[in-house]
Amino acid sequence: MSSVSPLSPTSLVILSIGSTQLGSALAKSLFATLSPMGMVFLRVGFAAVVLLILWRKDLVENIGSNYRILSLFGLSLALMNLSFYMAVERIPLGIAVTLEFIGPLGVAIVNSRQLLDLLWVVLAAIGIILLAPVGELTLDLVGVTLALLAGSLWAAYIILSAKVGRVFPGGRGLALAMAIAAIILFPIGMFAGGSALFKPNVLLMGFGVAMLSSAVPYSLELEALRSLPVQVFGVLLSLEPVAAALMGFIVLGETLQLRAIVAILLVSVAAAGASVSTTSD
Image (tube, rainbow, N blue to C red):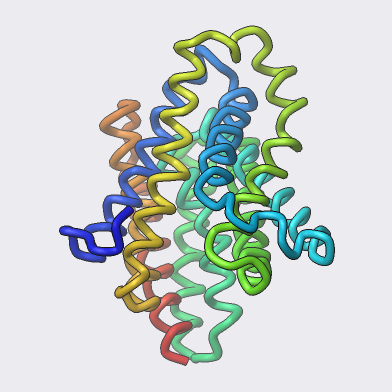
């Protein structure tokens, strides 16, 4: 991507969010053709190939002395994607992303020391309580648990990403971690996907999901961060749960009860507030 974009940094981040959630919605729509485990392997595998090509120069530098942290980074990436895809198979996309967002929200709050952060904790907690599968809101408990697990792994991913980024410049660390994640997911994906993985239409769909969910958003965000303050970037990312709910409705026809919509908005507000607090410390 050129270093000069005709679009504003804010527009690039919004496009990135839309691309990510469109990729997730398309992936879920394909679960009848290919299982979540097979789909996540294709997504991560294709993303790894693209990123390795993009960052192939001096790719192997520093691997020997940093293989442990790189391996942990790849493992968190593999398990995060796997648990998320298994979650969206069972619960609506918007709810899964909202629950998953507790991970980065928690990292932001832990890294902040402002009293106001208690408000964001309370808002997020209310949002999570509203999503509890009780009363009129019926959610698959396994799906909820998997989404929360994905959120915990997302938090680990953020922490490990910062450490890997200090050792591997640019996107090299991510490219190597994505390759490790693909290797970890290979036996799971092959077992679950079987011969369906080798069908041309399935491969094409898997490639499309990988581009929408990984390569395109990463490139857009990298371009946006050239001139966009981190504080603004964090606030914009809080739109992820809302975007997921919209994509779930548009692509998958998933409708949500008012209670779930309020929960999604509360978590998004909490994420935006925590992002502002963290970057203003």
